[in-house]
Amino acid sequence: MSNGKKKHSKNRFFTDYILKVILFVCIALVITVLLCLAIDKPVISLVHNIEAAQNMQVRDIVINNNPNTDEDAYYGDKIGVITCEKTGLNTNIYFGANRKSMYNGVGFSNKSAMFGDGKVSLITGYDETYLSSLRYIENGDIINITTQSGEYQYKVFDMKYISADKDAYKSDDEDMLVICSICSDLSEHSGECFYVFAQRIIGGGN
Picture 1 (cartoon, one colour):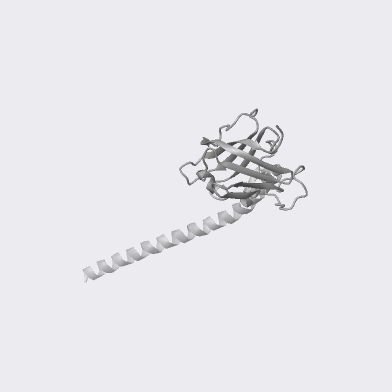
Picture 2 (cartoon, rainbow, N blue to C red):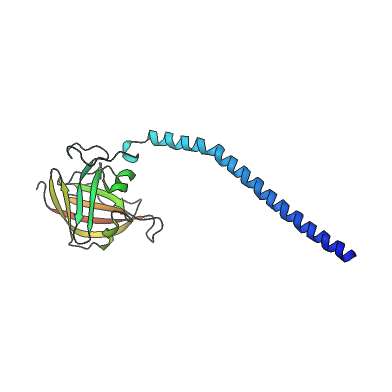
C-alpha cells in the first residue's frame, strides 16, 4: 500500500514540475512579446529619423530607366550599360553607389569621374547578383561601357581582393575604370571587395 502512495506521489511531483515549466515558458513568451511590441515602434521611428538625416547617396531612391541625359544625372538615373562578352557581364549602370542602384544593377559613384574624362570612374555592385560573373574575368579582357554621350572600352590589367576599409586606388590615377564587387558576409572573402582595374583604350578625350 505504501509503495502505491510513493508511486502516486512521484507521479504528482513530476506532473507539477512539468506544469511549472510550461507556465514559466508561457510567462516568458508573453513578456518577450510585450517587450518587442513596446520597443518596435521607437526603433522603427529611430531608423526612419536616421534615414531622413542621410544624404540621398545612401538612402533608397527612385530608379529612372529613361533619363533625358546622362550629363546632368540624378540619383537613380540610368546612365549606361556595362558589358563584358568574355564573362557574360551585362547590366545597367545607375547614378549613385547606393543599395537601390545595386539592387537594380550596379551603381556609379558620383565622387568619381565620368567615363572618358581621363580620371578614375568607379562602379560598385554585389558579387552575388549583377557582378557574379566578374570573378571569372582575366587580364586582357575588354569591358564596354555604353552611355547616351558615347561608347567606351577598357582593357583589364589587374584584379584583387582588398579589405573593404582600404583604399583600392590613388585619387590621381588616370584613364581607369575600377569595378568594386562587394563580397557576401557568408563568403570566404567576407569583409573584402573584389576589385577589377581596367585602362581606357577607346572613347573619351586623349
